Length: 231
Image 1: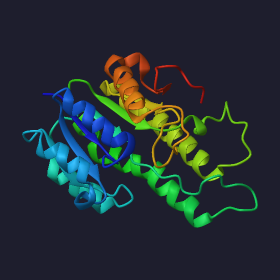
Image 2: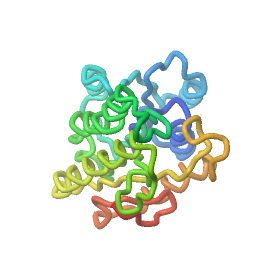
Image 3: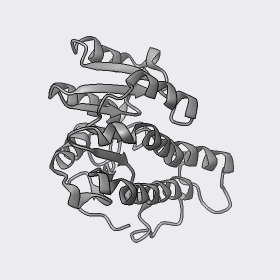
Image 4: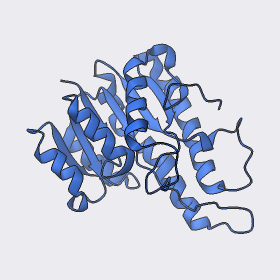
């Protein structure tokens, strides 16, 4: 059985990843901050005959990550999917920066995925597929940046892209494929109702690309449809 760990699994794209991987028969460690409030996720787990388990996780907290590591132990993870993230401050621009929100975004969007890498890198190395995936954003592309706002969110995604590029350099020699993804502009709480694509399209597209990744894709930044995004 193929194993995947998904952070931020209680709603949006994360919940859809769980739903789709469950339909394909994967063993899923579905993680979120408040499992007691994750009704849809718990329903999926209850109907999964034990293949989906729900775990409390706050990627902001090292102790929470280490508690999860103790629960999972040395079980191999074919895919570690860093999906948890926050906007921080929507449309933050010069003259109107909430520095506390900016700090919070960096803690969740940058340090959170790195905490997961440090805790679970050996689990990924021990697996057959060895894929370490982070949901980033095209808004973190420096090469494509033309905006004058969204400093908080954009900077956090640019930072996590750099983190994952370094992790790719670090773990590539052990066969790990580290890839960052832009999920598209998705109709979620974060993306809003006017967004271009559904969670089903986004998660489905990313899943297809993940399935086709090879070691040549280590350190890549990809769109949900597989297109290459410049750093």
